[in-house]
Length: 172
Image 1 (cartoon, rainbow, N blue to C red):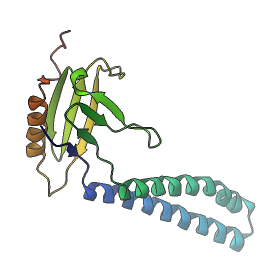
Image 2 (cartoon, helix red, strand yellow):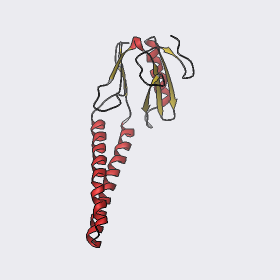
Image 3 (spheres, rainbow, N blue to C red):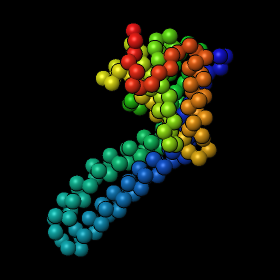
Image 4 (cartoon, rainbow, N blue to C red):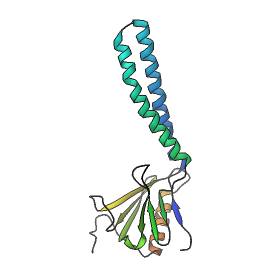
């Protein structure tokens, strides 16, 4: 294998999550405006206290929406497979991606599940209590999940990594 293979979530899946976060931020701002208007019209402090309590919720929602937009604009592949290195995404946006030598990947399993592909990886580097690392790749209508799963399986087969099912025990 001469080239690096990258598998990334589709832009359509990212757009949906961003739209939901932006809608939540707008709804929280509308609620804040309603609380402030109710406090001014009725003269009751309870509405004003509700408006004060809405401010942290709006801050959290807007930060989350900004993080999602920044992540969508910046291209970051979910899985990158080079000749000697496998790069997996980190769980937090501030942490560096997980780089694993391909020789340390003992086994893999890949399954198409509806419009996404589930990739399970076993090896001594896995810190998850389940014993494997799970990476889910989303597909939209322009991507065939079964074809993507077959492509990933072919790449791992070319690298000499053993394929197995999730119910099989991992032999040492």
